[in-house]
Image (cartoon, rainbow, N blue to C red; front, side, top):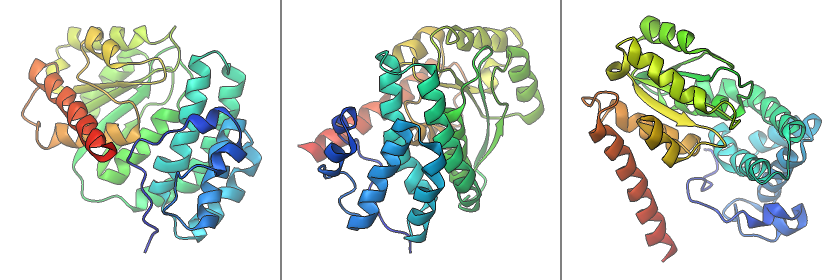
Length: 278
């Protein structure tokens, strides 16, 4: 029986601005045994510091202690990469540091991907994902893709620097319910908009629900370019994807009602968090 460790609540990660000793004093992951809690904090800082050679020596012991692959990804790996994203936005980290952190994530995901795929439940839908043209970053996209696979989706990952015509070809070939665009750089985020316009020009917009995400992406950007949903992290992406193919499956891509439904999910999540905190 895997250890039950809370990963879906929003943790205060201010300590990650300091050092691992500050992190060890927090109550994050406090429901885990002490040795697992410390492993989680080491994984967080392994990603922040970009010590990719040490990653397997932290991931494998956690798995041996009955921590699930999903918990590792949604837990310490997600918090670590969130701090990397914050540092990048604040110009505390630049691309070389981000790439070192990405190597840590890749090392961990190489171990965890077979386990995530093995968790896959019943088939519930098809998703095409890719990093938009001009952008070579894919770590967040890979996490989202793996979590979607574990949730029961068939995922076609087109890779990085994907031009609009390749997204269009994949839509025609795979007939997905959802297409996801990732971008890390502010200089490439406009390609999300250009890709949506290309899909519209091909007459395919109503066939697919468009998700957008990445470090510089926000709900405001999603609203501006006419995407259907913004996913701040992999757990939110899975939640909204499930809603799109289940509760809102009859709504077409680009329908304002679908956009409003995705915003309502965000409002409901925030209300639940407030109720727990209060």
